[in-house]
Image (cartoon, rainbow, N blue to C red; front, side):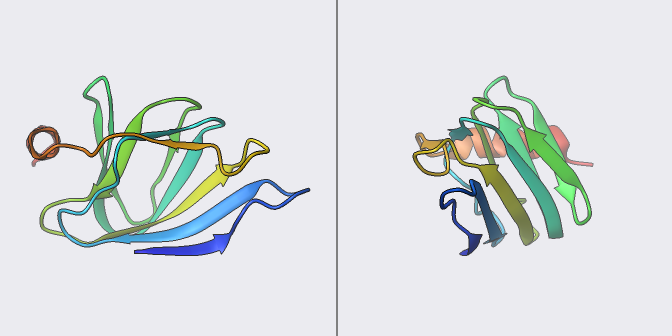
Length: 116
């Protein structure tokens, strides 16, 4: 569930949204021309990158995704997760490039990699 807080509009270039994920929900693979900051507000989630790195995140934590890094984020399979997503636009929008869905196999591997 996406609730836009601010869309980039000249002269400002900030896009801010509150994203909420039900258990098992996640974004598609994507990247941001100028990077992205995620601040987790509720629950437990995952942030994964193409090199197989997966970070488990929980309320109060902040993750920075570097410019151009292909990544995804979402909830674990057992918990809700919500975050504030902050992106600086590239002058033509929010600078996001959307790619293919995260497969069930990729998601399962991410979960296995962060289980306690």
